[in-house]
Length: 261
Image 1 (cartoon, rainbow, N blue to C red):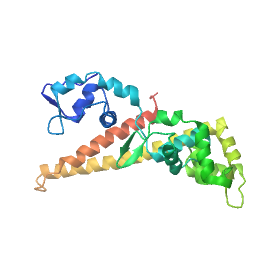
Image 2 (image 1 turned 180 degrees about the vertical axis):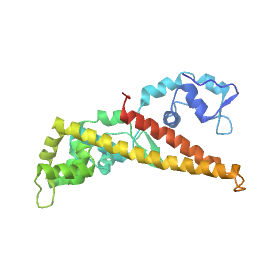
Image 3 (image 1 turned 90 degrees about the horizontal axis):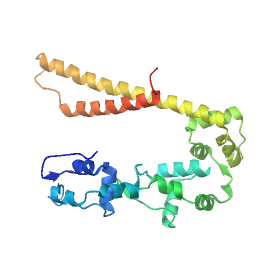
Image 4 (image 1 turned 135 degrees about the vertical axis):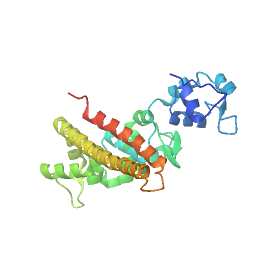
């Protein structure tokens, strides 16, 4: 629902909310000329200008979708899982250079790509780029490449490779066909998904503990100030950031744990 505000200008947050956009959608909409640049002090949009672009938010969403763009590393990982090859960041760059993939924007100076563009790529084009890079090594992968193809943690792959006694060549590389066979093993895939969920949850719980300690420390400093044990009040900004982070990580934990019984 558009954000209603009662004033004569809109900041970036209000402008995006009014159009029903996220900040990244606002950014690419501006970069691609769908949305106008600020007309007040180079930072704000006048109410008159905003009225003129009503409906442009739908155009931005239609062109760029709802999924945030990803960088080269995540793009390579997504393609690797899709085509069953150890795609690397440099392969993504080659795909861009030869016109198969568009750079949609940049983040902190690095190119980013739309997920739907990655999913529309011709698998044959991806295979050709990977084969050109690997040459005679095309039919083999190292541990890192295998983990990338499977979308598994490296330690998980190393453990399962040992349990399955997967053969390696003189370079310590695995046959690509063996890795693809692991990918096709549905019971194993479900097992790994559950392991990944447990690992992610453990990491989130540790993060929650660390953030809670930050908040508790701030509360102790508040108490010390209230009790005249110190003349210096605690700063608000650090605890504000901690509370936001705590809210985010608790939402992630709830999502991982699923509905409570």
